[in-house]
Image 1: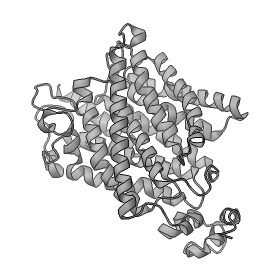
Image 2 (image 1 turned 30 degrees about the vertical axis):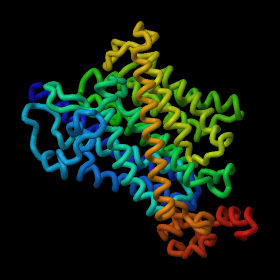
Image 3 (image 1 turned 180 degrees about the vertical axis):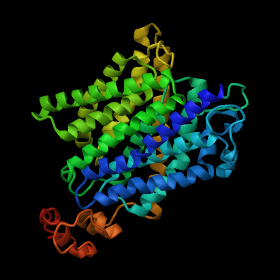
Image 4 (image 1 turned 30 degrees about the horizontal axis):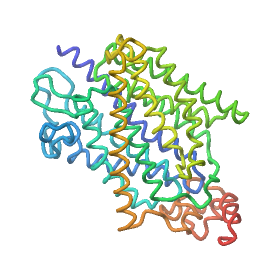
Amino acid sequence: MNEAVAAADTAWILAAFTAVSLMVPGLAMFYGGMVSVRNTLNMAMMTFGAFAVVGVLWIVFGYSAVLGNSLGGLGILGDPLEFFGSSALLEAPAEPGLPPALVSGFQLLFAGITVALISGALADRMRFGAWMLFAGLWATFVYFPVAHWVFAFDSEDGSVIGGWIANTLGAVDFAGGTAVHINAGVAALAVVLVLGARKTFPVSPRPHSLPLTMLGAGILFFGWFGFNGGSALSAGNSASVVILNTVAASCAGICAWLAVEKLREGHATSLGAASGLIAALVAITPACGAVSPLGALVVGGAAGAVCCFAVSWKYRLGYDDALDVVGVHLVGGILGTVLIGFLADPAAPSGAAGLFYGGGVDVLWRQCVAVAAVLVYSFVITLVIALALKKFMGIRADQESEYDGLDVAVHGETAYVLDAVGLTGASKHGTDAVLGAEAITTRAADPAKA
């Protein structure tokens, strides 16, 4: 690679890094708008808090555990001590190429956002301290190993051994359908089962600000071009194809979700449009470099339609996934990863041939094995972590805090000043005066709290 090409690639990944970094506040707004006014700040704090914890761990040992030489050459975990503290990242590459510091920073964003995704399922009821500890433990014992399986490729000269899914199995996952979305989605399910349902379930609080949610979805949409396009690691045709496929899938996802919603409920809603967008983005994440633009329409449309049905499964099965992380990220991630086995076009950057393109079931079975491995590992280890935290420190907020809202009870703040006096410093016993009719209505619904 010559210096001019290396400089162009570096500039592209720097731009992608900037776009992906906006996904942190985007996710905070997306989730924050969907909860009640009493829990808006807590939802945003769970996103920013998890991102901060994971970022610290990434600098200390996470980068090494994910992209370091595999321990024993087994493809299970990178050596966490190989780049301990990441001081080696200060050095420029020996030959023209991407600076290691940039690669590390880009992957840091993936790690932090993946953990933050889980928080949407736990809205309105998890202790903030328990969440912060969970974020660190889950990143260490679940995300870092799984990311090594998927994102760590063997070096061309054989001096570095990467993860088993990327190399031994050879499954296709361009930007993180397994390591990010399936991983976070099934982890959310495990924690929800331990945490328990909200007191009002199956009735959920109304989203307090759908415009905020749509703005958050729009920012996530923007950031996703960096997320997927930056995963090409170069400024060229691959990144261009990925970006086209990403926007194509997004359009199909919105249309499909709204169509299903209109047929089922008689309305095409703004929340449905935002949800269809995210579902399609989730599904196209692993497939964006493997399918044609027409294939991207199929992936996005399938995700919009299927995930629209999937979000209602929680009512039938009895798990309280507050903001539909399971229905969107788990289901969408599985769908997008498996559809590669059918729709992979050998002319696309990944070069794989799916069942519909004459490749038989070779790609399909590899995709299914990758999905199953991440599902089982992430669910089991997450369940152990959640049960341990529940036993030794407790993970559920107390009943009074749940009723009054976690913004005031945990953070001592309110998202909005709803009267002229500006009682932003009110105690939790004065929450009704600050937060208005919603808190009063919630309390009145339960005579024990009235």
